[in-house]
Length: 88
Image 1 (cartoon, rainbow, N blue to C red):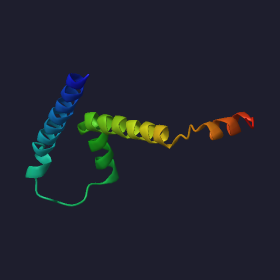
Image 2: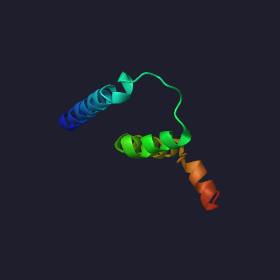
Image 3: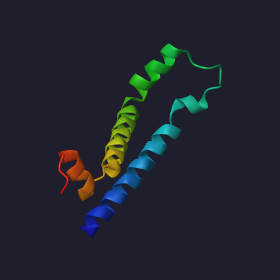
């Protein structure tokens, strides 16, 4: 179990390094800033050029929301009995 946790951490670290390398190698950084992109250019960039990153961020955000909803649950016996309508 411990080896699997260490392997997962190393995998996440490697994934972050790969994402950083891909972002820093993008030709956008070599261009001069001619102005802010239009809405259409931004949409095309997010959905075409950065599709994988958008999907990964969506998955991470959904995992965070599911985890937050799990942590907020209150499963004390008093609250469970109250939800079920019983007093004992």
